[in-house]
Image (cartoon, rainbow, N blue to C red):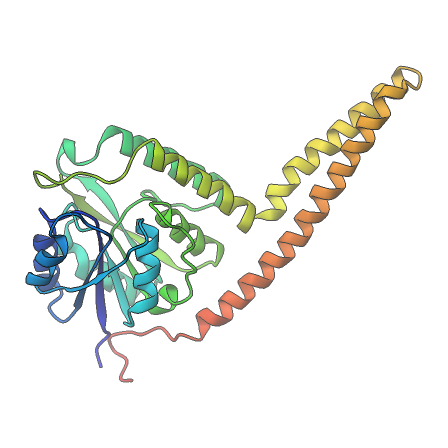
Length: 305
């Protein structure tokens, strides 16, 4: 039995492009089921998607992360393709992305964007992507080139074990960090990136959503790498306690230095001990996540069951 493929398209006001996306997905993946999840669109996105042959569902909680969480929970398949509903990605590359997932037994394949038109990728978006990708590489050791790409292919065991805590455009960051921290195999495949069709507008705010993604990165850093994250303030307080203690001795027992030195030492102990505790909790969580991940066998096209 061939692997079942589901194409997932989160949408918000994409009436100008959604029909083309659905039709192209049906053309390149004729056996796949095409799902469009409408997120409170104020135009006729849902009706156009249904007329084009997609299965249309609705998510009331606003935000791309909310839609992805619902899609991953609702849909059962062997291979999941996720793309945006704006027709900016080259869907002709989908068979290649799926082959990369199956043949190399990856759990996630990212379509890295190669812009074909200058106006396809706004400078602010491009700069923010480069900056945030660099930050994630430093904090988590993730060697990806396009962290915020919306074109991805996933295995079933990835989708069904991914917690999806984000509500907005931070979801791509969460996907990447989940992959890295759980040591899941992934790959990148270059794909063409086109300008939006006339009348279609990006929903991503460079400043507002950029800061949300930045805060998500910092939150995940403390959540996923607590030993390092909490050791930084612990070392700061340890250094402060040492300096204040030495300063007090140099000043022939100056009394004023000892209360802040003592408080700094307490800060060192608190951050240090909590870092050790949080790190152990994170290790336990990863063990449970790994066991759940292993409960879903990898489905390949040559499997007979």
